[in-house]
Length: 214
Image (tube, rainbow, N blue to C red; front, side, top):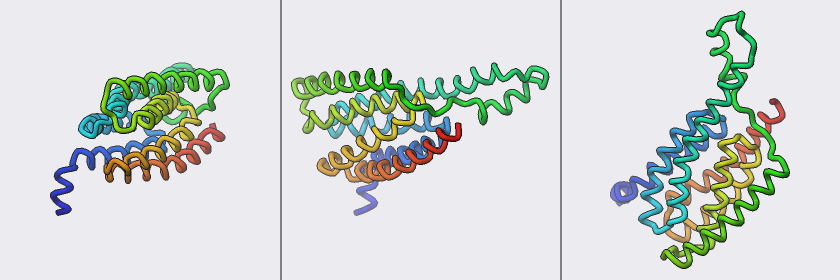
């Protein structure tokens, strides 16, 4: 029976496994989190479509786009700083060797102005999604679906820019998601988001150390 259940839910299980790897890489600030995120999103587009979580499905499409942008930003952050190291006399090989470790995109704190802009974006996204899901779809939980999706959009953009406070948003998102997926019977995904929740606290601590040490 267990084997059959795993076969029937293989896409969700694979997505959950890829998601765990994604968060581990995120905590470690490893640039490979982005290609893993692309794979995770591809799996969950299918999972959320069949479960009628349309906003969450759309969110995964957004993740695909932002994963490409985040991958570029994290790599470009290193490249731009490497060009300004002034190591010309040492040769280009020496510059390339030190670029990833010392000149990568740094973790930063959010500024007040940016926080206000992102808060406004969240509120706008929430009401637009809530209206669309309530009127045009058969989503079983339009309010929560809109809340989770809107907050996740903001948090993912902050992650792509390496803004420390994005971890606080993930804590809220992961807790709400675990409860919603439990109510909908998506147990592997519920377990995934509980793991996400625990790992979010670990990420908060790890990135704080990186922030104070930068």
